[in-house]
Amino acid sequence: MLTLRSMVRFLRPVVRTSRIFRFDLRGPSQVAAALPEGFRLVFPAESGRLPADLLGDLDLSMDELQRRLDAGDLLALVLHKGRGAHRTLVQTRGWAALEGCRKGFRLEAGEAFIHYCMTSPACRGLGIYPRVLEAIASHLGAGGLRRLYIASNIRNEASAIGILKAGFRPDRTIRVAGCLGGRLAFRHDLGERHE
Image (cartoon, rainbow, N blue to C red; front, side, top):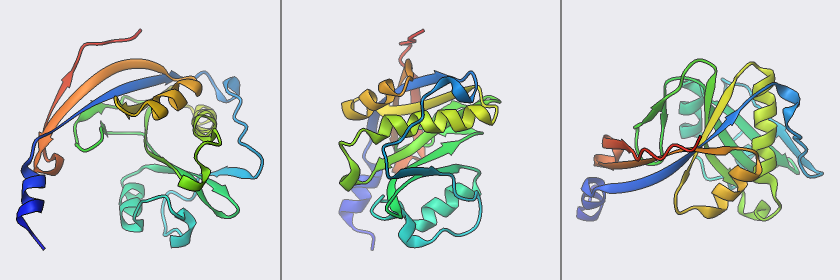
């Protein structure tokens, strides 16, 4: 139902600042991709339906997941005791969309954008996030990709720490302002290049 509150939220301008991190790949063996005992990284089929209970409490609807898989994203899923402990989507073409908006930056050939990362609340604090990113980098490096990007909201320090622990390095900072649920957005590269 459309309410005044939902209309105001839809029209209200939103400003988000994201740090973009970069990882240059040099093959599959450059990272030590060891997950804690009992955790397993899988890349489920790129198409076809996944069992609904596989994601556990990872806060992504099956319809949204299927839409992203159909668009070409890869799903990296960490299982613990047969249930989802962490999920990450990897985009390998098109525009890398930043949080809350369709604007971002164009991926070149050989590049990928890691996004929609979430660790199950029951598995937080176990240090699996940086290890998952390392394992994904190893897997994608073996597949021929040469560079990975990941974005983190500037206020999410825990995510930035995990990203840095995985070997990513700051690349740039981008501010996105938008409204209409992200359909109207303006991107501004703050010019903070971190080479």
